[in-house]
Every structure is written in structure tokens, then in C-alpha cells.
Image 1 (cartoon, rainbow, N blue to C red):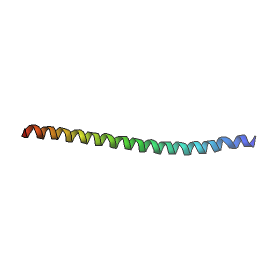
Image 2: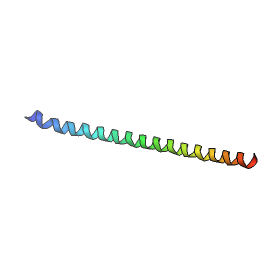
Image 3: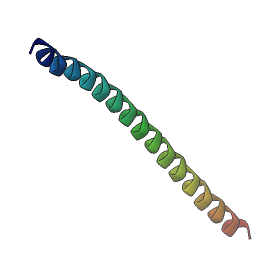
Image 4: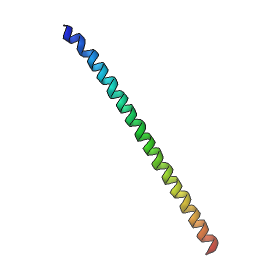
Length: 58
């Protein structure tokens, strides 16, 4: 019986550790996705500027 009582506590600790890790990984992935979107937006802005520049001097 005492073993059964100890297992949930150990499981809770490992679950908390895994939740923290997955939370940190999720945050890192979110930041990476945001960075990719920002780079894509910047590329789109630059493309638009190039097209406008070419149109002005064509």
C-alpha cells in the first residue's frame, strides 16, 4: 500500500517536469514561428519596394 501512495507523487513530479519542458518547447516553437512570419513579412515588403522601384524607373 505504501508503494501505491508513493507512485502518484512521483508521477506528479515527473508530469510537472514534463509539463514545464513541453511549455518551454511550445514557447520556443511559438517564438520560432513568429520569427519566420516576421521574416516573411519583411521579404514581402522588400519585394513590393523592388516592384515599385522598377516601375518608377522603367
